[in-house]
Amino acid sequence: MKKTTLFMVIACATGIAHAEEKNDLVIKLGGGMLASEKEIRFQVGGRLMWDYNLAKKNGTTDESDIHVRRARIYLQSTVGDWSLKSQFNIDQASETDEGARDDAGGTVEDLFITYEGFGKPAKISVGHQRVEFSLEDYTSSNDITFLERSAVTEAYAIGRLAGIQVKGDVGGLHYGVGLFEDGDDKTEASKMLLAARASYAADVDGGLVHVGLGGHNQGDDTLTAGFELAGVFGPLHAQAEYMQRSTDGADDLTGWYAQVGYVLTGETRPYKAGKFSRIKPSGSKGAYEVVIRTTQGEGNYSDTELGATEAAEIGLGLNYYANNNVRLGMTYSMAEGEGTSDEGQEFRARAQFVF
Image (cartoon, rainbow, N blue to C red):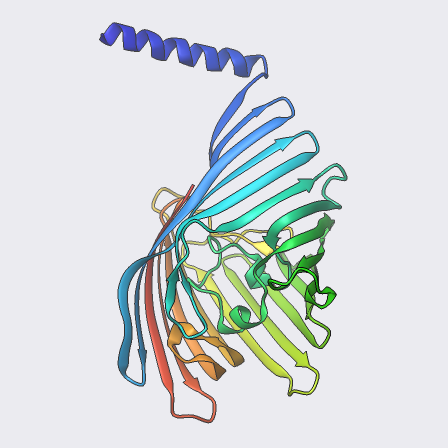
């Protein structure tokens, strides 16, 4: 039996090696599993985030539990100039406007087709996809430095919608512009949402500086705009965004956040195509990162139990990147409502595995 098994293993290994030698089939493991044969590519991967969350409002505990924050699997395939990406939630804890979580397993995250025949300068995607607007929102939840996006980003960014979008990269310039369906009524032209974002990254004194602008409309009377500024200089990285929403007949809503991070083990936070990715450890002992963030203005402060309001928040975080796939993190945030006596705080710990 053992000889038979050994023979099968040797035969399979020889077959794969023979295929690779002929350049017929190549299988790679790393960021998921990638298989390619000539102009055909197929990739599978996913993420799992287990969180412990302790949140209080005015000294009273509102939440204390362990839950799956995100569990997703994705499939991506390419044939010639065309590609398909499908990503689904296996399980997810999502927050409502009131701060309570709803289970969202089985829902669609990404489901779109892309034409890539123009190369990096222009890729055209049709389907359910992320709307480009904010640096923090456009950065994957796998790669954001704080465990949760800021209250301002949560309030002003769109997330994902169904539509058509063109994005591309020319030198240090990255752009994305798209037209999307916004809402359940697909017959009204006023339910179409137009979104655009452009950013430019330049090398400065051995580091990188990023500047970006974005905007989107909701209906005929609401316009949201955002400004981005970020930089990376060795182990030090920082980013800030200011956002404003203007609605006819109502006062403007504004908010901003700023954060600074430092990688104690010396690695540099990667940047490519208008967004950041997570730290890649340079040694077998992993990488450590500390971060501080301040947020102020109108936003969605549900993480600190204040909800949609005007507030000021400050938070601290610590991340340990065991390898390219595993991250352990902790954050502590506290917020105070503007013009009220409401106070909120949250401690969050996460075990994250990405493949």
